[in-house]
Length: 117
Image (cartoon, rainbow, N blue to C red; front, side):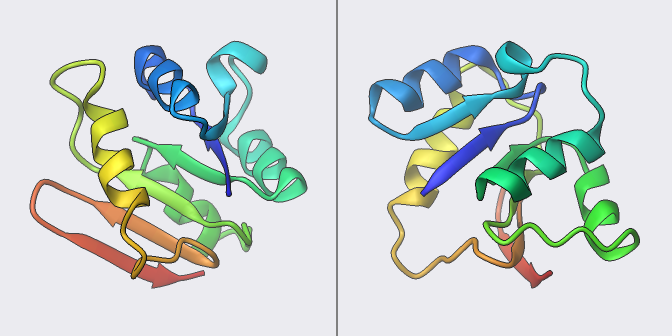
């Protein structure tokens, strides 16, 4: 599985996940300041799951018709420390019961919800 970290994902979390052999591309490094629509298109073209703190991706999916096959992970709570994102994702990615494909996965402090896109 391949991932695309939006610009708002802390770089230290991206570095940590790369060190654990996750295939993760960082918008903030590779394509800084591009639009959400451009991020979505990269994810679709490269079949990557978007990781973001930006709620606009739900709107792109449900109002504007973007259909990222690999899905979107939207983390609702802002990290309190730079590696928090990596820790949340590492725990989530090891759960076999969760599939991100064709889903908007919303993570907050107590729940994980999914909506098919």
